[in-house]
Image (cartoon, rainbow, N blue to C red; front, side):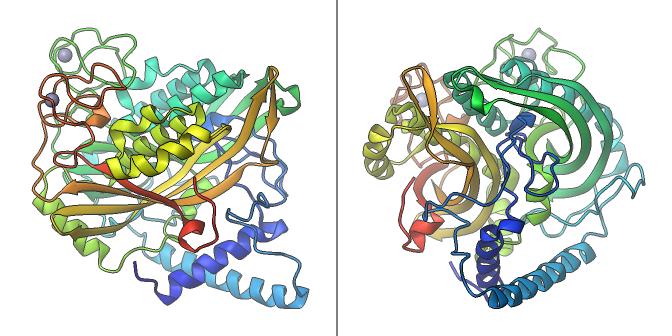
Length: 503
Ligand SMILES: [Zn+2]
Ligand SMILES: [Zn+2]
């Protein structure tokens, strides 16, 4: 992966920024969000489901393996100069981004409430506005989605939102809920108020349209950990989040938000759909984007505004993405980032449960051989695990396979459960960046299923047991790269930079 001057500079900037106490605004857990009080201002920001996260900032973990520890004990005047240079650079970048986002549209022009639209996501650099009628019903759906997601969070139950979230979003919540149950944590939300909903920007991505919606809301938030009441917190948060929805272009618009019925045949949807979001009568994949807008990502304001600032993208990535999108009908960056986040959360769950079999389907045999021993000896579970960002940074053809590389920024705090109590291993939530590759054969056609939808990529048969390695119908190994995107490498950025520490 090539580094240009800017990207090298921005990595340095990020290290410096995150290392400076007055800038350390930790990216807190919250899968659609999370929680965390920012260092100075005392309001909440970012994190999973508005778990209040009252960490008082003040810098990241000093475990050298992570971001944000760049030795702040240097000469202070030098630091000031560096700080000024970095600040000017960031202002310049924000200005460039701002100039490039004239397409962003607003439903309500309320500049006093609304933060400026600064970004266009990732690799989809030339957004084309989606025709207005396609968005007419969206704000009402977003409001329903927002309230249902908060209810899901409070009850740690994904059932009522399953039909309108992607599999990757489901997996982010699912992993978080598993951790919260292990840690005996609850986080009921109340007094939920949606202050503003506006379309921030629209994009075209392969066969899909993407809409990024800016939501400003406030709520009361009570976090309780039965195993360690020192972690309890309570407060009112007022925050901005960006919710990204996707829909297949040209989809006949149905409404999957106003009922619990199948948009295809009208039959009642199963109450507990879990990993598979499918009508059991007509087999329609309700959350595929073929029927209605589907929630594909929740990004905290800070992360959203930073998008693209620190990731080092491979030269010529946009061109490569266009090439792959025209060669493969199922190629869409948002969906691939969704698969990457899904696989990553499965791997993190395997680590937390100390059980390599949980990630078996999603990783190549080679990678499994490398990771399994680490998973087995891993002791900790994750308090407030939250995937801040997943970004495609590379796409290349190597021999007869296509390889996609993603940058993943994840926040979590390691904790140990012993004697019916929780002990924190990391004193604060730690943010780290990892680099993960997904590989699929260049000759792959549109498979009949996908391991990410809990069925066999080759024959479409259901995965009977999540621990199965081979399809019980056709014998195809689930982690074969012949038909699906499989994780072929996972390293931490620091590891790449020879600063040690694996997952
Ligand atoms: Zn149906
Ligand atoms: Zn099969």
